Length: 396
Ligand SMILES: *Cc1c(COP(=O)(O)O)cnc(C)c1O
Image 1: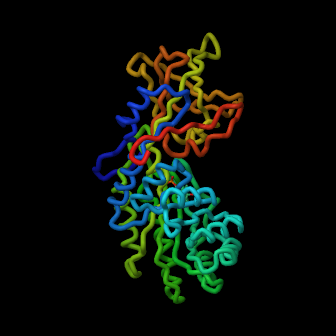
Image 2: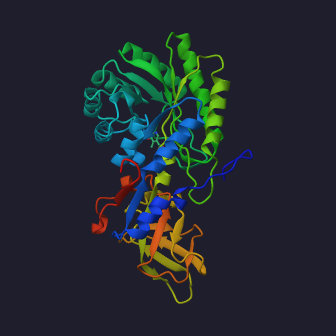
Image 3: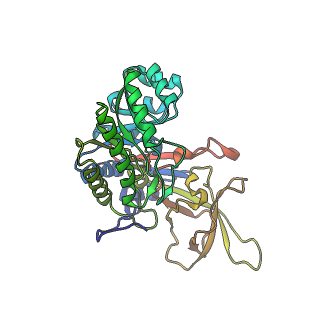
């Protein structure tokens, strides 16, 4: 569990959200659906910017691309981490300036780089020479930053291996960016999503400082230190507050950049902003047992791994469930989705308990589901519709 130094731990606050509860109590929509309160995302944005001395927030759009959330964040001055032409169009149409977009995907088609450039995007990431050449050709003169490989230990949803390069490669590539007519500006990394340990940023910050130092010696002055996303939300267990993450990150920057100019700090939160905005309402379809001897119940919901709960893979993300019968006698359950695929199981090992009286037709509310649900929902596996979203809050 998260480490603390005496500070209070925080749980997801969608649990007590009045507006969402009112919506659920008064609206009769066909389940499953997600209801999100954009005001919660705005509050999280403000809490995050308040926690750091100075930082530029690039909201990672893939966490929840709900247009009203994007608009609300844009109005507060947020920047955006985008990964495709569609995400660029979305941010621009919701009021973001192209100068506030970072094309943060290390894997881009040449035509997509050109698309971004034609719409005014001038900040691109890379982690390989081939990608750097593509950017030089299709987004000439743009600013570029290099993503470092980072370990994901401590993260419940790891992002290691696929992205980034070693620091020595980053030095050479950023140096050659100049010769390709680009402007090398800095370094990024991502320590894994739902990262429970605030100290995991320090090793990458130390590596980044090494790259800045080496390049300063060659007359290339980097200024952007993008420490990525990974900031967690309290699904069932509380997590350390964002202030503790900010303190650990700023402390590491102070230590490792002591002999260098103070870098411009950027963060790319996705889950931290979006998770607590949403509650997913599902319904029980079936409660059954597999034999007369085993009293373990299987509870089948009308949403599963293909309907938006993809992060239950490996039981990585364990959501909090709420039913109207909570408080009554309960027993152990295994939870699964409604499709005809046997991987569509949510929790078999995790010790979930639900009321013994749970019936088909009962609602099950899944909390903290504003991030990485609608975007993971399939378009119609077995004919089940993609996850619907209803939006409340300012700007809705
Ligand atoms: C997905 C993603 C993020 C957001 O990560 P969280 O763990 O949700 O904060 C940030 N940066 C990049 C490049 C990403 O791909």
